[in-house]
Image (cartoon, rainbow, N blue to C red; front, top):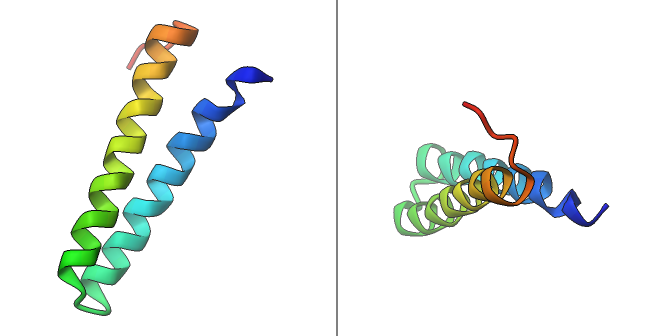
Length: 60
């Protein structure tokens, strides 16, 4: 249960990337989209590193 935050962080990061892409393509809000996509990318990387170093089963 305490490691439940890892997939949630990855999922929210992926959702932020999708929302940032929608802002970029549909609404032409480039600065906001880049910030949201950057935050989403960092969240995905944090989740991947947490899987590798905390849990120890990330083998991609």
